[in-house]
Amino acid sequence: MHESGTTDGAAFLARCKAFEGREVDALVAPDPVNQAMIRHWVEAIGDTNPVYTDPEAAAASVHGEIIAPAVMLQAWTMPGLRGTARGPGDTNPQSQLLNLLDDAGFVGVVATDSEQEYARMLHLGDRITARSVIDEVSAEKRTALGVGHFITTRIDYTAADGELVGTQRWRILKFRPGTGRGTVNPPVAAEPEPEPEPPRRMPRPRPGTTLDNLFFFEGAMERRLLIQRCAACQVLRHPPQPRCDRCGAYDWDTVEACGRGTVYSFVVNHYPQVPAFDYPLPIGLIELEEGTRLVAQIVDCPIEEIAVGMAVEVTWLDDDPDLVVPAFRPAGSGS
Ligand SMILES: [Zn+2]
Image (tube, rainbow, N blue to C red):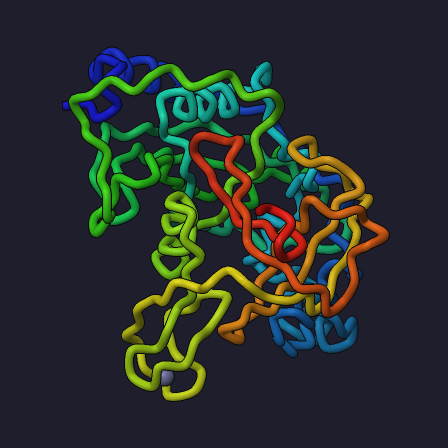
């Protein structure tokens, strides 16, 4: 019944389910609920309700004072990029569970749903703590993205005095890439896969895949650079999206790019440094001959020689057995 071929399904599920009920390290908000973060949030969302930003209007409202938008609940305790990095030796139960699933081949991840309940509004000065418990690890499920396990986490948000202010149920799917419906070459389930070489360093962060962009990463696994095309008006588009901006049609297919293009723009990234990459890290906005542009790493080129307009061709970063991504090198440099 289990698809990995190398792991006994029931025993593996039992190892996953042993994490149910375990508490994840609590997150304490680095800052109290404050006007600056609220202001940035409502500006980004486009919510002009004065109860969030205008003390007089808030005082005259049913709340009597400034409140934070309820749906900001999770924002107060969100760790930054470094805070979320997960390593092989991580002792956090959630990281251990995710590593266990990674090791069994369920390296894909997608957030599937999030439900929040609010016990009271948050006010300026509230100091929020988030306590998470791994609620459930599902049996292996077959989904459009691939075979995988759903992980549900329950998060209780409390104020400084321990008062419960809200709860959240957060579900992700950890899946095996390439095993979803519509996969061109599904892996053969009966054949045990050879043990992969141990990665020489931390793997690249996984892309956030959706039903709209999965084709791009599945194509990359086959060293094919695919561009989404509107099935109605044939216009090409990237990044992938569900609907055509030009004619409004939802149907789409893909075309394979020839792999040639030019550097439309680029940056050389120095900070923040993520362990999976070497720095300085040149990142290009590549204009393909087909007309769409994509963001990709520039390789095999001294940084001082990278220039806007430089002709480039696609190559593939494939050190990682489960993730192949396109990169671009000077045209002709690979032959
Ligand atoms: Zn169209």
